[in-house]
Image (cartoon, rainbow, N blue to C red; front, top):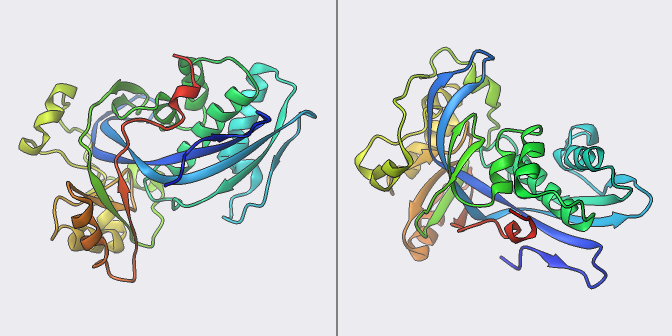
Length: 292
């Protein structure tokens, strides 16, 4: 992938990379009184994702440029992120925002959340709002539970509803990711009666021994039952390793130590599914633009 972040010489343009994430495991350990589920998960950043082009405006207007992925502007998370930052900082600047979409919607890869996070990071930098990482993360949480992770900018062990984050060291690996061709609505999975909500809590220190434990995605069984395409993709990929669904689905993945092996597996994926290879990232390419 080419350089994830490039600045123009004028300093009023930014090309922002919005990386995908994988959930290396996802356990549902309880439920709060307000209905939100208590989770434990490990987030892994990938070198595959969306791109957002930002051009600042002096007239204060926010405009979305040339979108063709079917989301109304008022629901678009990059616009909502820009509006939120503008409202909370009182800046007189505006921006033209253009999204190059690669990540599938309803895929469990965090695409919308990552787009929102990169927009907040990019505009905070261009508009010189001066918000630090914690402040941006608090804003991001208003847009979605995964947004703070992308602003945190490191692979992480997450708890709560996904907003309590600890930096996590992960292995350098290549992932084959399969998109089974269905969109899985997150609320549908979390509201299913069959969902296990009492998995025993784990500790971050246990993660290095994850191969010796029953690390899994608690949402996977429900999604596989409701969406047979997810089940089929998991069963196909499992012949090459420990295949798992990410997030609430629908994408599934398998890790490999060798890029060559990952390439070989990806070439065997049935043509009825979209598939790609992604390399693990140590941290978000835009992390240095935010003050701790």
